[in-house]
View (spheres, rainbow, N blue to C red):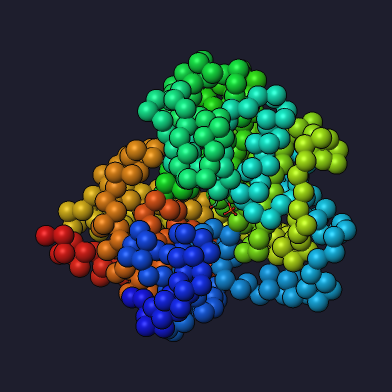
Length: 435
Ligand SMILES: Cc1ncc(COP(=O)(O)O)c(C=O)c1O
């Protein structure tokens, strides 16, 4: 239940901030439209300004794999800040960070740090266009790659149809260079390439889709996209802004054994500070300035605070992974999905879900959910009811059904059990209102 102080804070914010927020999803429009305001966080818990405590499965939309205010990360930031917050000349921290990424992510030989996921994806497609001399890119319907003009494109009526701008302000001339196909549909990808392969610089893909809920790649899908892109001389970009260091230590590419040409990162590599990165094959990265002609720069890129936080997080992840931490996260996610499906079925509601590494998705839908069409068909009103009831029980899931849930390394048995108990109280209430 959103408290009075949060409601007042939101009213005040709306006078001076667009929609009261600095990123549209924070306005909670999909679930009723009034967000709780954060006061502070501690481990798996977020405390709002009304003093409510939530078991947090939003985790700042993914970055907080170590939960809120992890002491090691806070200390690393504080100690680094005390020595200066930005220098405009290189620091050794940036090299150490890149060394960790290169060591952990199988396809990445060289890295460029940036300040957000959007910066990473837009730079990666610039590089892909420069490397191939082609201008079209392919994205999947329902995948999100940040808010650069090229990505704000929805599906046309057919796979080869020209994209239409999803947002006013995106020039049609840019949008039409973005071609779209359904996620998980290798035949559609094959056909698009058969028609227009010689125009396509790259396919950009979330290897596990995280922005239509959590949707898993069908067995063989990633391999098929890899083969098609290679055969047509296009690059494959895995957007691992969500999946990087989250579905496993080496990201989705290590988990599925499919290696892209370029990879984009964000979220977990910054541990809650503004960071992104892109990297890949050495010969491709050599095209980026100053080694090559593809211009891309940033005053705060490789910022020491962000590097210190990210580096601390990655090093802790390496140790945790060796002790089976990702398997534990996935087992927790599975338990939430199983409880959700069992309770829904007990009360005659449709439900399905997925869990992989530290991400999961709960859908009010009979399933299977394989792409945006199927994801979109889930019962959004029911989810909004479920979300509000769970919030009242002290559990914060994503404030929209078509978003992923995030588990952290500091969620434990106690939080999982409390969440399932809360679901057991909530399902009869939402099912009753359904009747
Ligand atoms: C898969 C994916 N790519 C890119 C982005 C953009 O990252 P940022 O919000 O840091 O610009 C997001 C953000 O949610 C994302 O989920």
